[in-house]
Length: 336
Image (cartoon, rainbow, N blue to C red):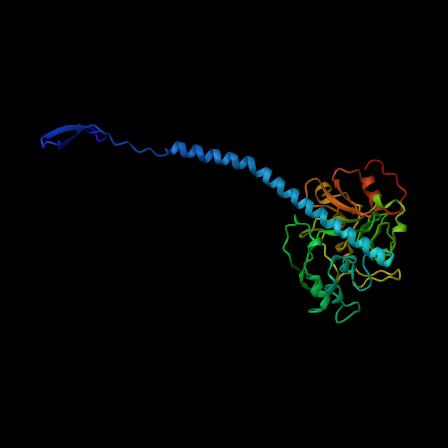
């Protein structure tokens, strides 16, 4: 007899007490489990499904990040318009104390206590290099609307004497004329950000009004995404961008004299192509650090003087791109 289904002899008695016997031919059922081949097939199917779903999940996440980035720029554009309504001009790009455009719109960004804490006079070694001062504390304060959610950087980094400085993702538009921070390293026929006359919206001691934007508010952008990466160096220049104030800018003068450097920390220009680090990596480090660019595939977001946010593709024509940064060039920009 086999292991399964063996006949069993069963003894019993009927109602009269007579013994009887019968054969119980019930069979126990064998148990079944997954074979190794079946298990491997299931794992393979799960792997294929995960592989098919992962791009869709990543696409949804990128869409959410892009929407958040666009909303940040929308908020910055609205804050600058509110500032203009109150002061009849946009804030300067920076001044002689290293204060920058983003510091001046803190009240419009609902950061009144932070703005009220700032010092607008020199103290110690300077407004932004004075260890432990309120301006240094402000430079280490995270403001969500100044940071693209796709920016994969630590919240705080030590930089130029500020131990907890906050890298940001957006810079002001200084125009198309400057090819470097400093006059000694410009491309012939261009100017540097030391010059106080630029054709954008924000630069040294600027006082641009909406009436000065003669090319049209829908044809001139104010703020653009910038691919912040303080760990990437070329020609001794890092791609580092910051908010509120800058110790490097502090020696700037508004009387036409030179002074200060690293103005590219707070403004960019369109001299270099959009996302030049990936579209024109052969350019010098000083030109790359001035370039606007985003963390999103194929382009970057900009907010225009009319408050509209547009996504510009990396392939945009250079002449059109530069025209969009000029406030008074009288350029024709058909169907950009």
